[in-house]
Length: 382
View (cartoon, rainbow, N blue to C red):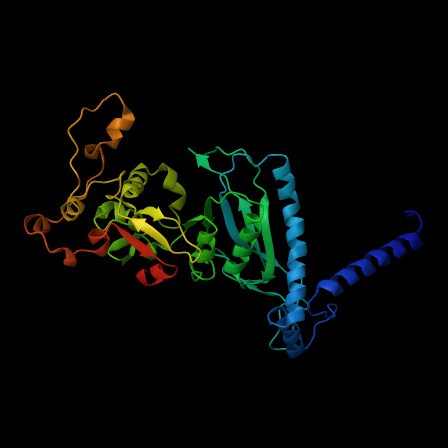
């Protein structure tokens, strides 16, 4: 193109416009004139094409998302080919951010829709007013920190993205990005998400994410932290099942120490860190990983060949075999840590110690060392 020729520039712009128009016509499930505001009923009818189950609309929406995924995953594949994600444990962060539209929102007063017929309202956690436009679900390679410094060396690039109507399908869109990552045989590590995903129903988000192998790090409101319920006698503490005899101070550590203004100080609160660390030995252990239905088996922390705690109640119900006394090399840290005397011990109530109740009056997790957890079981426990 001759840049000095105004007719050549105009012709070039028209070629770009026609090419873009053909692409959008082929991919848009419901082509609509976006140069003017339609009556509200007509705009709503066009917007419904992005939500209905018409086979042709479903096909076009699928193709459109495939095109978007191809653009987003191109740099990810390039990074994998060069080995720049070597050593990355699979940790990801998922967030939904608002993308404001340039156009006016629908008007009930004037009975006019928006030029952006698929736009919606997005409300962020800190904004007092919603923003009209779209929501972008982003999945990013997360980085680990130690003492406030980043210890990971991999690039923190976007691993997935889905643009959708404001406020629609945050859970399924996040699951879509993670499913595409699984096709690249990338590892599954810790998934960190905010309260928009904490509030999702299990079948929309958590069940699928756990089946993909991710461990969830979710944010709870202050009134939802600490002991959230029980299941077969095990305590549900901040999303994890633990021994019913978990020390109360450790189980309720997050209920009073944190609020929205103090959450950034968690790295410097050594007492809080110590109480959270004191929970870990009391967490139920994975006995059997998830089967195709998502069912797993969890084990009492005092059971098995490598218990993490000692429990008088468990020893009474399941008398252990007493091996011959042996010597311990006190200079060997592993040998010392493996000795029962070095493990945290549960404190049973005085009445139970003086008058042991029959086994059928004790929690099920204490009567039998393992329990079965099926998808949706913990919904009723919360």
